[in-house]
Image (cartoon, rainbow over all chains, first blue to last red; front, side):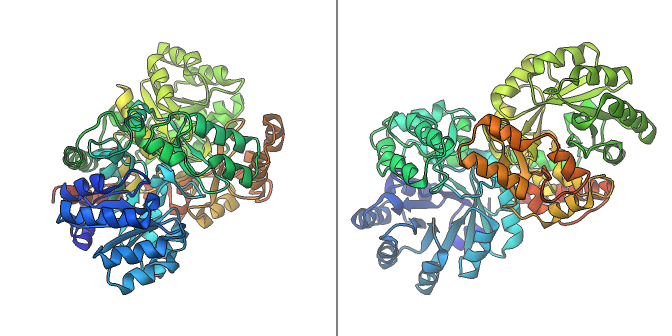
Length: 316
Length: 316
């Protein structure tokens, strides 16, 4: 399964593991890189020291390419990027902010820059400031999300038409069918988040994994729309946010309810009541906890079989 | 491009034209059937006399199979089904209500029954009461929509896993890439709405077609969520609804704002201010007004080319 993304990133399969807060430490990321995908360390929930430690271990655990995902809405994003560059990281996935404040710097240092976008306008902007790769992420994706709620099915082909750089699809992809669909829409790779949470190597709390396995198609909801949408599994915490929004509560009130610890309470403590369990809508497709390498091999083989079936249909 | 749906419905291509209020009269539906797809008369905006007249003309304009889309939340749905059955209609697409009150009746009379659903639960329910075909419609679709806002990318594979009957994908499909993606996800056909609005044969007002051509990825919004979500192009009417919802207005107040004439004002009078322009999020992919037959041939050819490219990638 070769695309231009494999060359650009030096990986075997065009499968990126999304950077996820409290979930994408070296344990998951090194397993993904070793299995032929691109592992990303999720700097969004790490102090600079934690990021440093994670990069150090990554360099021991894999000799394959890996990257760092840096949300640029955090105070320490610049020092995180600098630190990673100094330690030899060559691939950066940035998100959640204006790419003009970080991509030129990454490019200047000779690293590869991918930027996650929720709309065509954002895709064009990221390309214009030098992004090598665009990750077009649909509203079905877990965690932080765009305001315009554009779905993967609609966003990916429009982004692919709008920019010249390669487009990676994200949002709702949890098996080989999703990979084949993303490639059909014009993407040359996929970024997968939630599906990688339910793997042996991912360190999140068992309750979190259980909640993903239990999830149906209707189990997630987009919360906190006034302050920045976040897709969560429907639990007490998520429903509180939803109800406050339905009652017309102010952005400030939503921010207070949202708090700062819910993601950690979910991923580290498995708190089913107070935790904010970030998850994509594709959670309903997830029914097992394989190893990362089993998962990647299975998805690649599914995508291959499915794409042959589709070609047979289309040429019959 | 042959699937089981072609056999079941007696059509050349597994492409269904969605039933759309004020937009799918015999003019559009006969063009679709004659071009090898399945044209549907949209009974939702027709009186019984208008439906009768439309069926009469359809029978003259095409000798190919066609169907009637009947929203079952309207007072006259039963008499519409009876009337169509008496006139020899053999294919029914039902939506917007409990399928148990209509599908057994359709099946008893020997007709084919397809039911449009927004979630896996609804898909299972429709199958259990005898639906021959499930149309799994994602939240990116135009017009009336599910409460759970499940996207096509996530809904189609989950519906395909959950039921034994064939699944048709709907929502966000506006070109051959979308068709190839839908087939990749496990669908055996597609239902396309908005893309057919912007065709020569569709009788909607020119302003409506212009608005679809002008639309970007961010141009639609899901309104009226408290009373039953409807996806509209963002104009004064749609923004009024959205603002009322953000302010926490009651269902009753939303219903009053929603009114009863907005769809007609859009489709018949092209009223950019007061009209409710139902449109899918895929409108941003639409940039021309071809004839129905040009459109279908182009989409089929795109899907074929794209599926070959994807198979080449997946087997490289």
